[in-house]
Image (cartoon, rainbow, N blue to C red):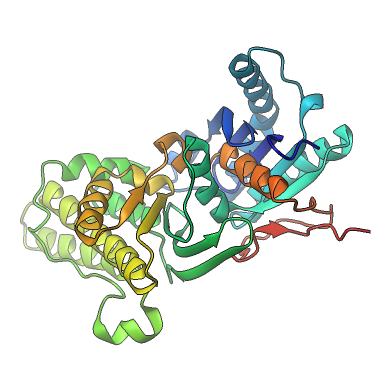
Length: 361
């Protein structure tokens, strides 16, 4: 196997996006994504069974498209036979959706006689930054914010040492955006809609609560997040306005809600940087597309002397390229492939970077 610049195909099916990525080492050749978001929109959120069926339908065309993109990037044909390895998300995520990708990856690996790397979805988000062409310095604090996850990590080494500092205890930030959008009568997905509505609003109009930020929370939940109470506060505030026969100022509510989420995320991330003496912060996950979050993170980090890294937004959402990139790093580090004795793990801990690693004979 080519350990210096391995050619790896990555499969990501942890939620509603079928991601196929191909990398050569840290060089991105293809980042193909087939989303089933439109199919979930009528339900106001992701329906696991629909997501799994959509993955089944999208996988083969997505793989073919990824190979065509990789061929164009390399200037010569790239085929499945050329691969050095196959990689797949083993967890965390929706169990049914994960199983579709895992089944496809195992079939490819066995059929092609290629090694298989089963990797962690959250650590994959960190690996996405490697595909920008710049070297990543360690240690770094990583804030991952998406529809399914809100996690604060301390990354001492991408392939061997990732520590969970804190995570959401209820709703993920992206989930809270979707639910508040529904309260305000905005379409799904809620993140972009809240962002658009907030553009004309006053972020200081309403002082919504900052969950897990009181002094009493600091001992046991310093780096944990909670957005359920914030969502409820928005619902109660709008209900009171409607009950009083007053119009709901959608823009102000959206801006004030967004400000509360951003304030908590950035405050806790920079606190982690300070307490662990790490002047680097990596942002990842689909919610990083939120304009206000990026603005506040960059401004407050600059004041604190912290360097912020944000991968291209196409690599922040769930994608197969980040999975392939993480596997390429594992290969370069000399890690053996995974055995076939692994399955979908919807609660896979972030400390388990690679799953079911083979024991050398």
